[in-house]
Image (tube, rainbow, N blue to C red; front, side, top):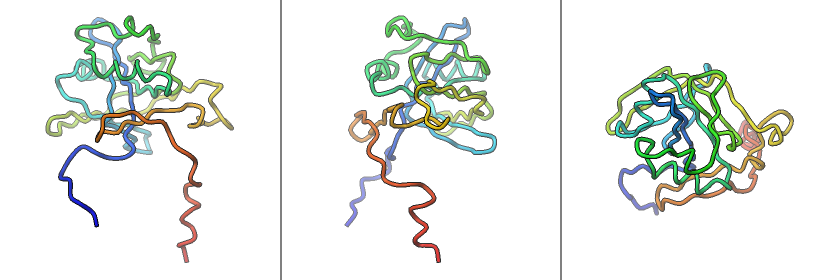
Length: 189
């Protein structure tokens, strides 16, 4: 039997997205944002939800761009720090020693050390309760070349982190379970 635990912000898996932006003085900033995911196939889009109080919120509205950086497991401390410190008060790149790189397609920085990056142009803003829902059209994806398998990003080599909102913990990816669009074919008559 299932037990009701009430309405909450729990869904699995929850990504660890590090959002890269520039402020009005073109100072790079990065923020850990777990509320997000792919929101459209054509054009390819990703959406994130941020509170207005965040520094990144204003940066996105000002520059109309952001990057989504996927850290590998080895950057757990840096990724967590990006979620607990504010770019209003601290230079997060100086503190972590990570390298901001100017995106080629949008007016936002990406993090050189993180293996997977989406460069996004802001296309939609929706106010939704406590959060603002930002949708960015993916203008380019950058992946460390050595982490490609048959020309595609290899999740086992990228080693992205997942966030558990229930216990506020980070996790790695698990084992391969099967092939999408193949496993369920046994039910088709």
